[in-house]
Image (tube, rainbow, N blue to C red; front, side, top):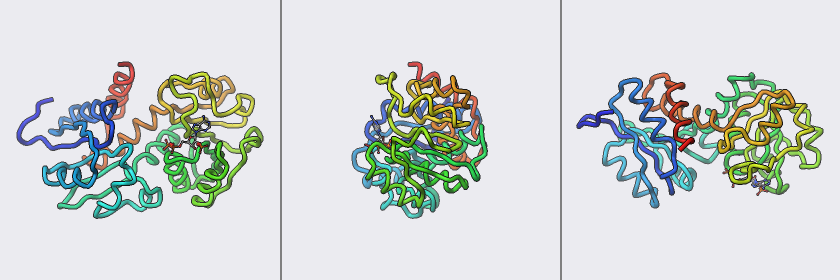
Length: 271
Ligand code: ATR
C-alpha cells in the first residue's frame, strides 16, 4: 500500500484498540480493490473531542468499539433506524460535513447466519442479555425471525425480552426449547476458559444451526459439541468478517472482497 497526499482516512476509535483486527482486514480490502485509502487505530478516551478532530481532519469513515458504542450517539447528525433501536453504533460515515452512524454488528450476524439458513419465520434461542444480545436480537427481528431470550440473570433477560417484545425462557427449560437456531452471545467458552459451554450438549440435537459470537477459540466447545450432534455451525469470526464487510460497503460503495478480508483476519488471530 502506498500512502500519499490523496489517501483517504479511515480508522477505529475505542479504548483499547491495539488488539483490533480491523486495520489489517480493512487495509487489505482497500489494497485488493486498488483504493487509495488507509485505516489506522485511533486510541480514544474523549469521544466528543475525537469526533471534532476526525471531522476537522477529513476522515471519511470510522469504526467505533468498546467503550464508545453508546456514548457516540448524541454527537451524530443522523442515525440508522435499527442502530437507534439497538442503542449502539459501531460505524461512522462522514459526508457533507455531517456524521452518520450505523450498526453493522447485526448485519454481520445476519449475513453469517444467512449463509447457512434463511431467517424469516425461524425460531432463535438467544443466550445472553448484554449489548451483543440486544444488537443481534433487533437484527433477527428485522429479518423476520422469532426470538426467545435466555440469560443467567433472569431479571436482565426479561428486561431485554420486554424491549424486544419477545419471549424469555428460564435456563432450566433450555433443553426443551423448540427453536431452530441457537446463538451464544455470552463470553462463556472464550479463551482461557475453553472448557466452559453455555448449553448442555444433549439439548443441541434440537437445533439445525448453532452460532457462537466468541471467536477465540475459533471452534468453541459449544460449536464442537453442536457439530458432533449434526448441527451446522457458525463461528464468531464469520460475524466479525461480515460486520467488517458491511462497513467496507457503506464506506466505499464497492462489494467487499470477503476472501481477502477473511485471510487477514485469520492471519491476525494466529499472531
Ligand atoms: P456484551 O456487550 O458483549 O454482550 P455484556 O453486556 O457484558 O457483554 O453481557 C454479557 C452477557 O453474558 C450477559 O448476558 C451475561 O449474563 P448476566 O446478565 O447474568 O451477567 C452473560 N454472561 C457472562 N458470563 C457468563 C457466565 N459465566 N455464565 C452465563 N452467562 C454469562
